[in-house]
Amino acid sequence: MILASVKAVPSPYRYPEAILKALDWVKANDVASMAAGTYEIEGRDIYAMIQEITTQPVEQRRAEKHDLYLDIQYIVSGIERMGYAPYTGQEEILENPEGKDACFYKNLKEENFIDVTAGSYCIFFSNDIHRPCVAAGEPAAVKKVVLKVKEALL
Image 1 (cartoon, rainbow, N blue to C red):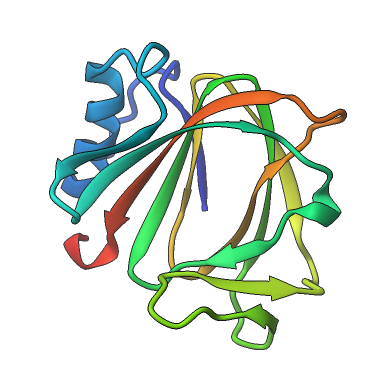
Image 2 (image 1 turned 180 degrees about the horizontal axis):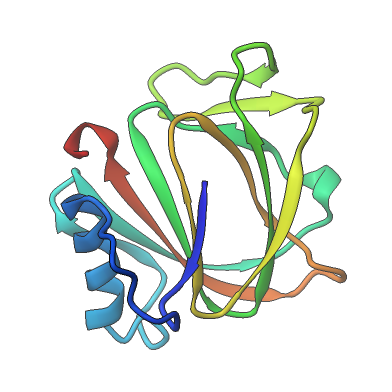
């Protein structure tokens, strides 16, 4: 898991090209004005889902992991709490829908939470269990972009 911000001073190291392409798309578009929906960046290899959500109490949100795509969860406006736990293979599965790139977990041990603010993003890889859309206090409106990048491109 990586937490970063588009407001940060540029780093001397670089993300892989596929991640840069996804982040460049956010910077090149006025995502604050764009409608909720799915936008292809590089077909289904890299795409963006603009979402307008209301955060919820932690017990109402499911922890999830993806095998094929990494998630870049970029906050456009509002504050969203996100949970994170390293995947060990010992977690209790809540649901693993067939044909979906998502597996949901329950009773996580050692889950940590971070409040992600506008302009910041978290990158969750296939070995990262994450719990998005958690309220940082009271439920609140958040606009976000979930960038999906096929891990095979890394």
